Structures are given as C-alpha cells and as structure tokens.
Image 1 (cartoon, helix red, strand yellow):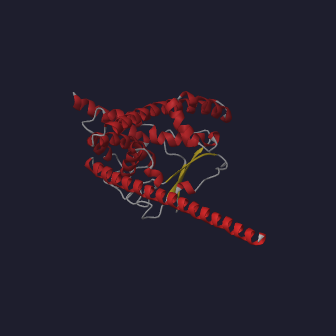
Image 2 (tube, helix red, strand yellow):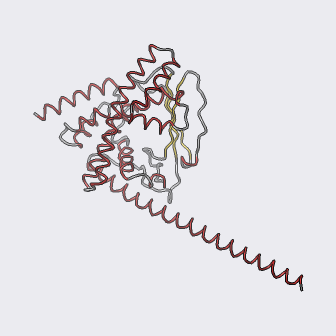
Length: 328
C-alpha cells in the first residue's frame, strides 16, 4: 500500500508540473503573440505616416524615393555601417572628410553589435549604424516605428531629399543642405496637418539644432586653433574638456559617441558633424527671408552638381542678398 500510495503521489506531482509547464508556455505564447500583433500594428501605422509625409513632400517639390516604403513584415531588412576617417590633428573645414565608407548588412542594426574599432595609424575613426537611408532597400523597422513622430517625419523627409532626382551633390555639400531642409519641412508638415502638439515639438527641435550649429562652429574654430598650436594629445584633451560647455552639441556628441573611444574618434566626429550642421543655422535663417519653403528648396536645387564648400558659401550669401532685396 505504501508503494502504491507513493506511485500515485509521484504521478500527481508530475501532472501538476505538466499543467504548470503548459500554462507557462501558453502565457509566454500569448505574450509573444500579443507583442507581434502590436508590433505589426505600429508598423502599419508608420506605413500610413510614411505615405502621408511623402505625399506632403511632393507638394514641396521633393520627389519621393523608395526608402521606407516597405516594412520588415514584408521585406528583408538591410542595415548600414558608416565609417568616417580623418587624418589625426586635422578637421574637414574646407573639403570632405578624408575617407568615408559604407558597408551593408542583411540584418537589423540592433542585431549587429560592434565591440569596438581598433586604432588605425594616422587616422581618427568615427562610425555610425542605421536602418534608415536613401535607398529602396531601407525598410521600416519596429525600432523606427517606435521613434517619436517628429523624428520619424524628419527622417522620412531627409532620406527623400537625398534622392538623386532631388539632389545629386558631393556628400558633404548635400548633407549640409538636406539636414536643415528636412527639419524645416517637418515643421511645415505639422502646420499643414494642424497638429499643434507635434508642431511645437518640431519647432523646439529646430531651435535646438540651430543652437547646436552655432555651438559646433564655435567649437570647431577653437579646436582647429588648438590642433595647430599645441602638441596633438594635449590639444585633443583640451578640446574634449571644452565640449561640455556647449550644452546642445555636448548632448548629441555623448549620445552618438557612446561605446567609442572619444579621443580616437574626435577629429572624425567633429568633421562628420560639420558636414551635417555647419550651415544649419544659416540655412534656417534663410528660410525666414525666403518667400516660402518651396522657393528655398527650388533655389538650392539649382546649385551646381560639382559644388565645393567655397561655392556653397558664395551661394548662401547670394541667396541672402536675393531674399533681402525681394523683401524690400
């Protein structure tokens, strides 16, 4: 009887374990299923936003590209690794970054964790990963769908601006123009759809980027001086110590340099940022004098394909004079 009783007890315990495992798996399955459903819903919502923003962009003369038209639900993802290299002790002030490359991977950036970049003799190295770029192989990811609305709108417009039918300029010239135009167009988008909450956020973001542009230009000027008059390592330490005094730029610098050696990346990072933000404040200022944003966009489209930094600066002065004269 004792043996029989023990056998029944063991079977009962096994049955309890089986039931617990079953319900545990069921709960996990339901959780995963719910997350997948919610993720797909967010992707569908973002797909609708993409269509709306691209249609708006076309009203400003921005021909839409194939970027971000599909989602990871119906297309394989592709991520990019961008690498910028600048000779140590120098900044790309009057020309492009010394070396720039892009490498594509058939996976999401979230699945491609880089441990570190080792020293490259004679060069400063900065890298960035992303799932969004101006190509039809760039598809909407869940990470993109979870970004705030203002950022998503800016990215959609920014990547469409990069389409060769819109701008086909040297990289550093095109980024200098496209970055502020994307932010300005985002503000116009929220005005168009009468979204007061996101309009306020877009205007705040624009003001922060303008301040970042001013801070970066001031920092780069001092950095160039220090790299000329001080020994290399001493100059770099002084520049890194200065960055926290530029609050807007410092936040972006710390966020984007996370996981990288700040001293090794310094010259390349500053040169990269100059390409994006050197003329941001100037171009945003021009938008206040231009008849409207579409006119400003059309005027920039007339810039020569082979434009240099000097040519862009001359053109910016000409546009400023043109808009001031027209306003009188």
